[in-house]
Length: 321
Ligand SMILES: [Mg+2]
Image (cartoon, rainbow, N blue to C red; front, side):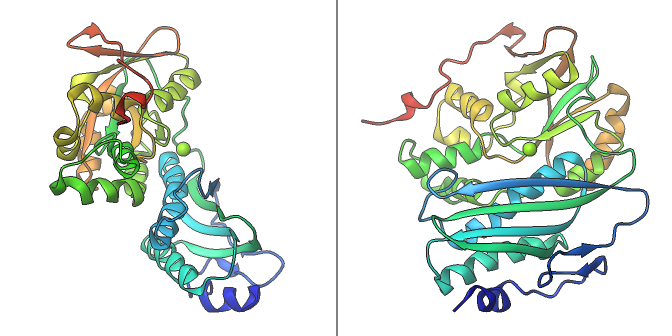
C-alpha cells in the first residue's frame, strides 16, 4: 500500500465544514476566513520514546496528539476549525493506522475540526499536528494580561496525569479502584475548549498546563510582570491522588507534574460572579488557588499563610529499588 492509498483509505474523512474551499489533495488547502477574524495557530510534535511510550495504544495516541494541540487553542479562547497532520511511521501497519485514525478523528469530529492536509514519511515514529482556530478580532487569552489583585484559577484536578505516568513506570502503586481513572487521565486528556471560549471576555490571562503548574504559571508572572501567590490547601486533588500518595507527594505531583492539559487563568475580582455563571454552563470544575500580587515575577507557595518549600522537585524519591 503506497502513501496515496493510505491517505485515501484512512485519512479521507468527510467534513461538514463549509469554510474548507480545498481540502487535502492539491498543493495547498484553501480556507475561507470569516471577516474580522484572527487566525490562531499552534504546532506540537510527539516523538516515540520521548513524549510517549513506544507501545502506547494507537487509538490513545491519535487522541492525545490532537488533544494536546487543541488544548493550546483552548488556552487562547479560540474556536477550533482545521488541523494538518504529519506522520512519520517506521512501517505501514494498517491495523495501527486504522486505530490511530479512530482516536484522532473521534476527537476531531467532536469539535468539528476538519483535516485539511498533511504529510507521511518513513522513519522513527513521530507525529506533528498543527491546529488552526479563529477568534473575533481583538480577542485572545494572552499570558501577559494579568493585573495585581486578580484571582488565579485552575480547571479540574491537578497532577493526575503525572500520577498516571508514575503508575505506568511502576514507581507508584495506585489502588485498584483508581487505576483506570489515573491511566485515562494520562492517556486521554480532554482539551478545555468550552472553558476557553467562555473565558474570552472574563479572564485577564490564561494558558494550558502542559509542564506543571509551577513552571507554567511562571510564564504568566513573567509575561505580566508580577508575582503569583498560590495557596497549597486550595490545590484541587482527585480522590485517586489522595488515595495513592502522601499529602506532600500529592502537592508535588500537582505542582510539578506535566500533561494535565487543564487551564490556568487569572480573573479580576470584579468578574468573579460572571465567572461562576459562565463556567457553570460548561460543567467543568474550577478552583481559585491564589492571587496575583505586586512584585518580582515568581511563584510563591504558601500553606496556611506561611511560606512553603516543596520537599523535592525531582521524582527520584518515588523510585522503588
Ligand atoms: Mg500551551
